[in-house]
Amino acid sequence: MQGSGKVKSHQYKTHVRWSADGEGTKSYRGYSRNFTIAAHGKADIAGSSDPAFRGDAMRYNPEELLVASLSSCHMLWYLHLCSVNGITVLEYGDAATGTMEESDGAGQFVKAELRPKITIARGGDSARALALHEEAHRLCFIARSVNFPVDVEAEIAHE
Image (cartoon, rainbow, N blue to C red):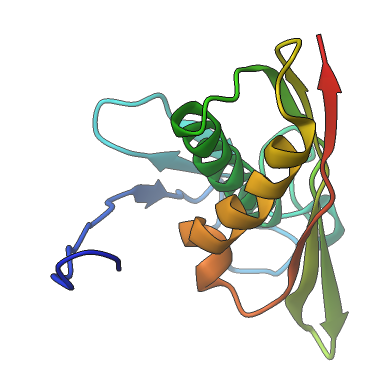
């Protein structure tokens, strides 16, 4: 942390709920992979495992949520940095991907790629806007917390 060196602690609380449909986990094929993620005062998130692991494709899976966390954390830092550096962002989109490899029934992410496309106000400094992605990546809490590379390849356009 910069500044006084004092460490601030933040705690995040969620509640994951699953309940048995029928006979519970009596058989591998028989139990539901569907669950709900909740946090006080917020809308629930419908979750499941990836369809490759018998989950419901219409619900978010933990792998998608991890990629979305990386993408949204980067975006929020980037918007902050643009704001304090005099760059007006008008639009931001990111088609992020994460790659997980599975072996012997266990898996782990080996990389993530963020592909933000940003539109800035006419006359804005494109080079500076592009460079701020490096700073956003360095500051992103989620990217700093994972043990795999997160690549960022941004594009900047003017309105």
